[in-house]
Image 1 (cartoon, rainbow, N blue to C red):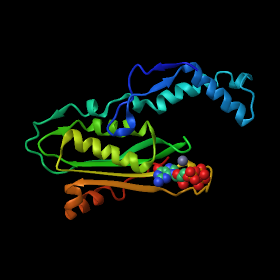
Image 2 (cartoon, rainbow, N blue to C red):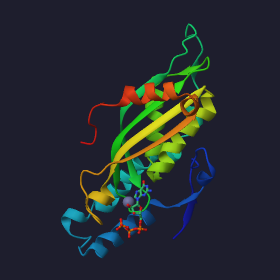
Image 3 (cartoon, rainbow, N blue to C red):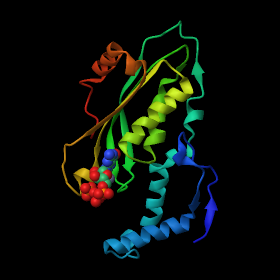
Image 4 (cartoon, protein in one colour):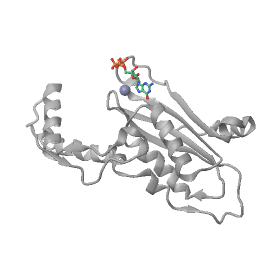
Length: 214
Ligand SMILES: Nc1nc2c(ncn2[C@@H]2O[C@H](COP(=O)(O)OP(=O)(O)OP(=O)(O)O)[C@@H](O)[C@H]2O)c(=O)[nH]1
Ligand SMILES: [Zn+2]
């Protein structure tokens, strides 16, 4: 199997995302073919003959977050805010990721808040930040921490809060098979950690938010 250098390196904050080599597309398709055979089917039958190509294209979509730099994403900020200083909350952002243990979906919702110190970021960039880290192989704790830390490091606000509620298909469709179970994780930084009233405000503003697991 010959390796080619990624045209764009895997990027991100934190030590686990150093630029890496990745295998060729042909090698990736061959691996899917092997998995089809492992499952017990014939990769040459009509219905499956295009599947390795489709799976590799799906992987490009599921994991495109490795090729997007969250720092660039949050780079454009606005300072003309009439000194707006209260918290900004984006709630009920649908979250789609893949569990790094079984490579099956994690589906849920994320709530992100920050307390600006002068600068604000375009609201869509918060949703994009969730996507960048969601479209990588993850465990929910790391995903939560990465989103919060990126916002904190780039925007340098007075505080950041991230809450994720998600269902893990590796727990619902296999293994222990417990449908309806959701995992809740949170990362509170700065004022959200130290100011009890602010934290209560934030948690109140996301409670009773709508269902997003469908
Ligand atoms: N903490 C945490 N655990 C996760 C997450 N996603 C999946 N897991 C768990 O990761 C664990 C992997 O356990 P292993 O014993 O190595 O794998 P396994 O034999 O497939 O485990 P089972 O799922 O229990 O069948 C399982 O307990 C999963 O439920 C996550 O986001 N955070
Ligand atoms: Zn899993």
